[in-house]
Length: 265
Image 1 (cartoon, rainbow, N blue to C red):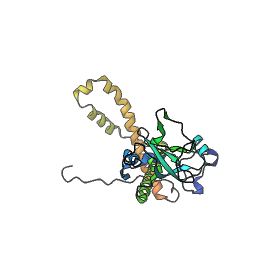
Image 2 (cartoon, one colour):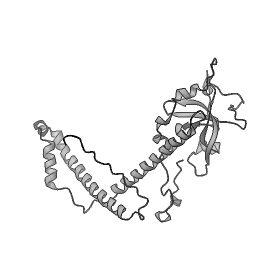
Image 3 (cartoon, helix red, strand yellow):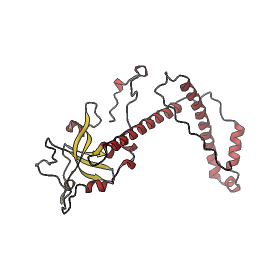
Image 4 (cartoon, rainbow, N blue to C red):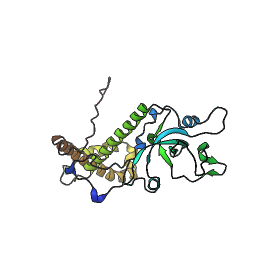
């Protein structure tokens, strides 16, 4: 779970702690919905018995904080402990793609404050009441239905976590390259840049457009900056590759193999 960063207790590179940098990206944005065997509506229909108009909670487990008060006030607190808890799934929000879950009691029952069964997600003709302390809106990757294969769900969580690690590592890598100074670097050849400009306005109509000519200076600066960044990237990759133990916290992007076309260029 992402936590608040403590600027007074940040790990140093020399400590070689794992992870060196705190997790700040939520896991649900990397969730692959292809792992799901049912749609959200189909999951909710499991709580409807034949001949009944009421929808009961669907049993499952959710990753929830043990302290319900602090869990609602500050879910990123370092004092919170998260664990997989038995819940009843009440409802689903299509806009946020979150499930409403309710912690079960010691008997495994889902009851409201008046000890009455919660039906139809807690919706009444007057609407839904305010959330109880034991109720949470959770993403699908934090919710395991008892009616699904737990091995497939574990693969789903591992896949999302690996993709999050890779994305965060690439974000840090690009940040390192962007922060490298460009003063003193070899600039792009003026003849090459002039040829690019000539090819860009080769159409006669474009040469007459004042707006295009005014944008050329901005485009020229962008091309020069991209060239200098590429030079920094090459130098950075060479240094990291030559000293892998020193820069063990840096993840280089994977090189994509160029596909040779079957015909033509």
